[in-house]
Picture 1 (tube, rainbow, N blue to C red):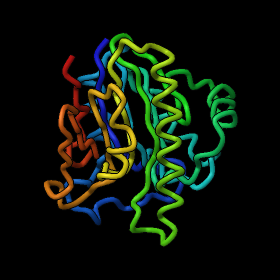
Picture 2 (picture 1 turned 90 degrees about the vertical axis):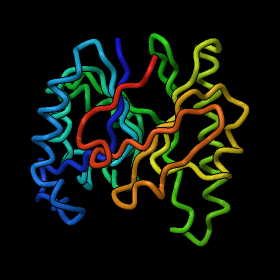
Picture 3 (picture 1 turned 180 degrees about the vertical axis):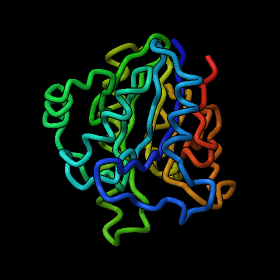
Amino acid sequence: MSVYTLSDLHLSLGIEAKPMDIFGKHWENHVEKIKENWNRIIKKEDVVLMAGDFSWATYLEESLADFQFLESLPGEKIILKGNHDYWWTTLKKMNEFLEKNEIKSIKFLYNNAIELDNYVVAGTRYWGLEEDADNEKIFHRECERAKISLNMAQTLNSEKPIIFMTHYPPDERIINCVESYNIKYWIYGHIHSNYEESIVNIPNIKTLLTSCDYLNFVPLKLES
């Protein structure tokens, strides 16, 4: 089993299409690019980590075509919430939705942790704090959610290193919030322009910007 990552797919297969080429011509036919590269690289036994903004759907039922597209691709997929994932609801409702529609290769990362062969995956959406005047309250909420997930990761297996996911890029406050945990990789997305300005370096942690346009719509393999 190998672990890959690719975020911000921004699918809209079941609703009126959202034009992603406003971010550049490289977004043209991006669904076909994702499918071709995914099928070329990912094997059935692999895992793909997705740090948010999977579907433009507003409601869970509207996201079915996007989930079916993802289900048709090889590998297990672990999805974190992004700021545009308005369809996101309770973990119970989302899991029931997957079961009802016979979608078996997808798991949600939401106040929980998921153990893999060589890692444990934890995470929280986080938030661009500039978006809300009440950002102190939001930060503490996200910090607590991060700790819930990371504590569960340690409970699952305290010996394995942690892959930690946030949708938004990490900043100093969230880094300080989780600094006591055994995090090896920090995966984040959200960024679709000025990539180099958004690269975050954290001592002793490998940080990865995984927005699919930044990765040229090619899943990125994590080093073992």
